[in-house]
Length: 561
Image (cartoon, rainbow, N blue to C red; front, side, top):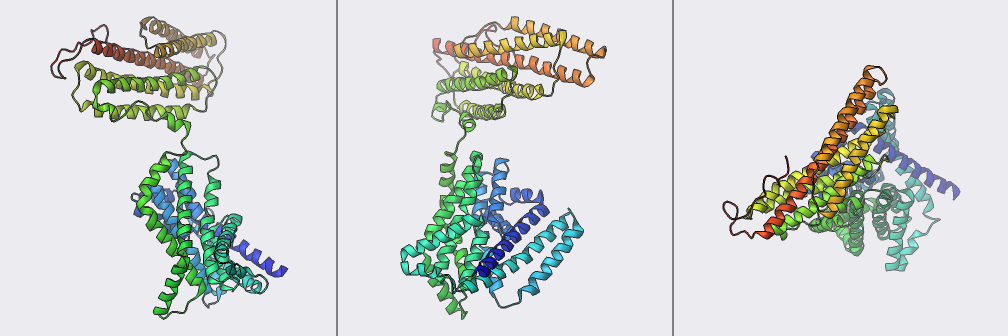
């Protein structure tokens, strides 16, 4: 008994080692080609399914393909819609394991196939080194070990057939079927490989340990069990990763339920088809065909609801950054009324300025923030949404003052986008800069303090929605900047500052000067939008753009460009 258990564990170990060698070897051999292949071959869901099927059948690991797909979604190379096609295909592709086991089940000498594969593969591995041929050799040796592992498992189950009575579950009826499903699920969870669990089930059926119906239920459980790997992989992961994993779980659970309901009819159809074709029914082949059939049926059932599923998932697992990057005031119904649309645009522009000014305060505060990069992405997404909204509004007739305000909204937004980009650059460069000492250090701190005061004032006026004269701040900052720049050049000329340090300091103070200019220009344009809006409410327009009585702001009110 102990020897049989040892043989079972050894066969399982060989199988898992083989799958790892196949996966690792082919992944290294493919290199960046895998990314290029997926990005090119997933332009439509049908092509995505074909790609997922082919890649999973090749590497014998749906988990590896799913994890790679998640990575490509996060990198922006695949959309969630494309990724679901790959996930569907990967579930069909993982059924190829059953067909490989079925091939081993025919009467031919395993050693005649497996040993040459192992020998040839290791020669390629040793002679190829780290080159692509070496990686292909490792995968080839893995296929050889795969066949030997399955053969060992089959022998172990044949010996255990008389000692273990798993088949007793069959007498429990529907409860027994659920017990078989649970057993298959547990085997996948324990091995963290649905391929290994399928191989165990098929070899158990071949050895007579479990009857055909029970083995089919265990195959269903093993197929559902692969969702545990996806669930574990998303702990602490990004929202996109969780959405792909959730789609994987939904697909496998729905497919499992359908397969369990149709278990007996499907097995009957396979048996009837074999008899009509004059073929002898082989349990392993029947199970492999059953596994493939219910996954294909799952894809057929899930295909029509992929769109609603994506919309459902897109509304879930949202991070704080994703929520912040979504417009709060822009709505298609508001776009029908330009005057209301201008109010919404101003409010959204103020949101953008709020995030950009927050980033500027963090960058000038001396403490690095880990959230600034996501803040910049939010600013860019909101700016793109504002641009699209302005285009949709400009297609409608509107008052002259409203029409003149639209470009100013875009100008204000662009200034704050640039301010956000400069804030992140200032924050990133701070760690690389050496600390300045003496007079130079004092001048640098004075310039930084003046920039901070401008940013603080812009933040206050944004909250109070007031405008004012910024000339004094601009003149004072320009004077401090020129004095510090001259001092830096003088220090470098006398050898007290290295050329690299000089370049770093000059670039940093230039970023700070430009940051101030962008903040001031953005604040002026936001103030001008408010002034135009006030005039629009005082003077009711009688005509649309192209001729009317709207009063445009005087030259003194318009912000400088």
